[in-house]
Image (cartoon, rainbow, N blue to C red; front, side):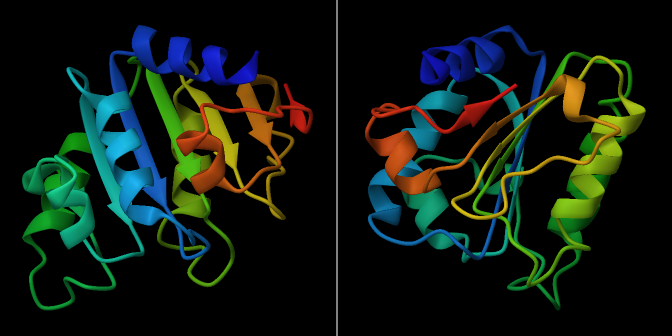
Length: 165
């Protein structure tokens, strides 16, 4: 069961890096609450292309969120993210990318892949309905799930037949 494997990867990681993309639709409020439960008790950081208010309402710590498209005048959250990211090298890092397409690939998609490439102890989990593929350089340490990430996390991964390791 890939959903349970995802839970286990997050549980056993020292750090969790989450990227939330522009392709998150549907019951995003319930999705954020599910994400908050997954991250409870973990050292995490969330980079989002969506607005931060829903994440904060769901219990994600405001100081652990960077919303670069929203926080254009306040660079403090991005600086906190870069500082946190600096401590991830050679750590057991779970990179969870949810609904990230190609609208702004230089914010999440490409930097997250680069982080995984350089951190040999990391695991990369990409959940996206259309763009779930991983680059060849990190594919051996990755899990791809070709599903709607909102539905996948809010339905506990039911109907998990489109997964690849």
